[in-house]
Image (cartoon, rainbow, N blue to C red):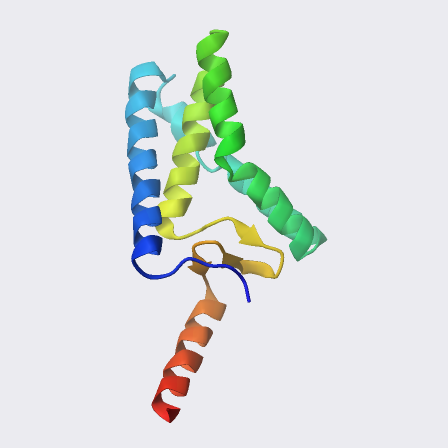
Length: 140
């Protein structure tokens, strides 16, 4: 069994993602290079999905590296300390993207496949498991 979050805790984590998306977007409006740049690079971290072409373990690793706050916060810190406005811009867009994904329920991935995340199962497998769970409840 994969360690996934359910119930109210899952809802809180998704709301946190929404808050991070909003905060990063507001900060970007203050420090950014324009909304065209934001739109152009917003889906950049999703290039990591190509890792799934090498299998679920490599895919999960590449996705998690690109969708962890570690790199994004490192960019934010470097952008402020150095100061480097371009690096700060990258960090804000990257952070906003991660917040957006988490708000939608796309959590960090387990090596079992794309649909297994720390925020719960997603995709077709999630719908299938919901039906199986409902059928098991009716048998009891």
